[in-house]
Length: 85
Image (cartoon, rainbow, N blue to C red; front, side, top):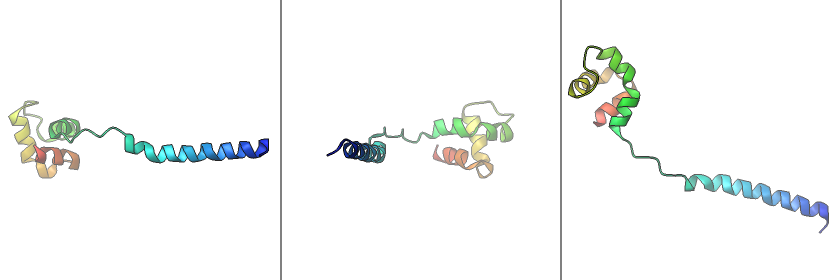
């Protein structure tokens, strides 16, 4: 094998290895955390809470009940979280 063909073969192997690593890497990725409705509600419902429940204390049963009463008007991610609680 000449120096040029060795270099070509090495480059081809490196390229193939790159494709294999790229394809296999997601299989070793950490499992995503399970869906937590309370965390999702805090993340996705802030604006809706301010819009529909401004006069209600910020946390607790009253806040949840207000969002629950307005569930059809909530953004999709917020609605999903409230319905899961």
